[in-house]
Length: 604
Image (cartoon, rainbow, N blue to C red; front, side, top):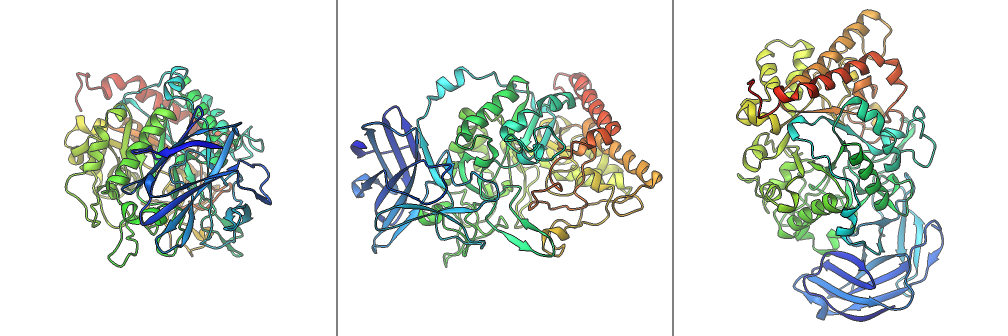
């Protein structure tokens, strides 16, 4: 199958198939040989086993420091696409199987909520598909990389629509979940193959255009394993999954079962982006570069842990994993290997996939040094902002982490990033609730938080204003519940923030009292008004424009149900609120030239 196999110094990471040429690159420490095993792509037959198609054995002549690289030509007829895995042989003779962390497509996540895995017979290398046990750790492979012929980037970009490039200060953001947007029975695509997919999201474009937003910010679409932590509890009557997706398994591969055509997720994602660009809408992604799906000491070992753990992770002297992310491990963003991966990943998703902006989850972790300490200067953020290939890409920081780091204003000042402004969120919530002494804080928030960002002018581009996001209560719940109600999460209501600054307006939860309902909707209109008329960039949580509820749950990360799916029936039930939101967005956009433009003669 392969001929003219030869070492390749300085390879691109991952596997690449261009014409009849193959190139592979991998970072691996403490191994004496590597074996690549290739199999035919066998979806949808997810049963039985597959015989080895071909293999390539590498000795240390293919090793360049800690980088292994090789290239070859293809002989004979080629499969349309193949899957492969990697066997590592260590100095003591032990062998381990890993999947390539730089894969751009994956196999094994075709069906949402169906945990499958792959195991290899070490005698004849037959590959078997199994149903994974419902436990935290599976000792096998959760995914296999897919290898298919690539189209040159210049050919791809030549035929794609022009990017919108909306000025940051005139942007209006809509945060949403790919699956949640179109999985409810209340929308026309529900129940079809497009339900909960990239293709289904395209059907929402007319609605989003009518609403007036300029960009959608998608919760994570890097491949993740929704079945990583399955909890089945008779009391909560449902299976707890990782619905949000803040647990990246493969940074370069789009979530497979978000595609209606699960064999071609890359093609479908790019087609979605193109449709949004044709409609003058940008696509932003919520990205996670603070930890991975391998978790901590007792977690999975898929790739990074087995290849070069000290390059990828922050570790204690005893080898245990430092946990600044709250998820068991922390990426070592001070190491050149990790920094290069992050840069290359952003370039790939922006140049090849067409993404216009990135919001960085727990971004303070990107500013921790190799010991885990916070650095005075955010070097990595500065490097990314000054990377020529990312010149016109929006970069947004969530300026804190799960270990107490809080750096609001730092990335904006030193690296010219935009930042999620939680001070705006909390001050506006408290002011609308009626807390005493909040007028000065409300004034600062409306002005764009010059007390944080240095001036009104700087706040215009640096303060991303929001009242709600995926993480917390919905806007309707802020005025309907005084306490969080996370019992359905299976953690006895211990999880989630306790300081929501919410107020139920007289009755906890659902009511038909006209006075309470009137007060709630007045407050909702006030929230929308303050969000759209404040200096900075407004972000709206999907569904807040028509009064979506999560029944008081402020941490719905684990629910793939009507609790998190947008109920489009509410667009009619709460049509007055939706119309008001549209008018507020239209007012902001209509008056942006003198309200939010650097060229305006009017000053705040």
